[in-house]
Length: 151
Image (cartoon, rainbow, N blue to C red):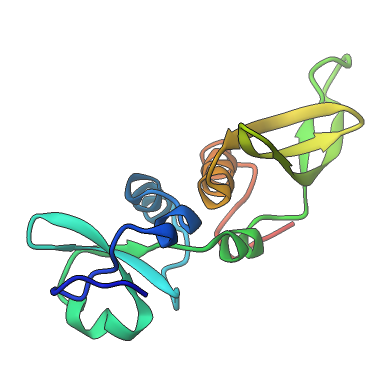
């Protein structure tokens, strides 16, 4: 990793593999697990910076949150969710399946789909950011419970 004199990871390619600090802070607020991440956003002095696991001792007393990689977020997303299919009369639920797709130049599409219907569709050049936004959507809409409770 490339680090500056304070030990913070320089904003090179690694920041393209985790959600933004604002997204990570929102995930923490909604109950995303903070347990044992590989990377963390931490406020050292006046700004948040990205730190790797080897440097966590240096930021122990600083405000911080997990900066999960896309694979870590995927582990917290359920494979399927039950959701109302609005086009049908009454409350008909369908099993919506998680789908990820790469589409240049837009980036990555992540969604929950059922028979051509989409529950939620998010596109971002950063896969981790797209998955994090999907996790936030599911939490805010009560489509998933606690972070460890997957369907």
